[in-house]
Image 1: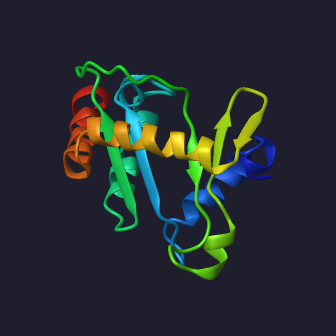
Image 2 (image 1 turned 30 degrees about the vertical axis):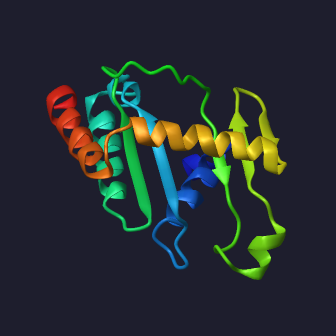
Length: 151
């Protein structure tokens, strides 16, 4: 029995990761807090592997990964969220499907729809992106943290 069959949601997350490298590849833009790179989940080997996987994903042309540094004074605070956009820009099917925002807690997942609400999340994400390191500097920071903290 594969571990993902035992742990709910793990198989779904694995499938999402596979969609980053299979055609047509999903576009993924992420802003992650630097604390995610520093907080240990598992032993040093697990953390090294996790950060190596992040650095590898950051090199994909369809992935934009940014790190929000801890030493920045950040007035924007929020729980994690995902903005799901459907279809290609300009495609007919994309015109009929609006964005959906997903937020997760320990036992539930909330979906937010409607142009006004999703627009607010898009603005917030844009502000976080602008405050974060560039994708190239973020990848370098991930690798440096992996070597400095988790070796």
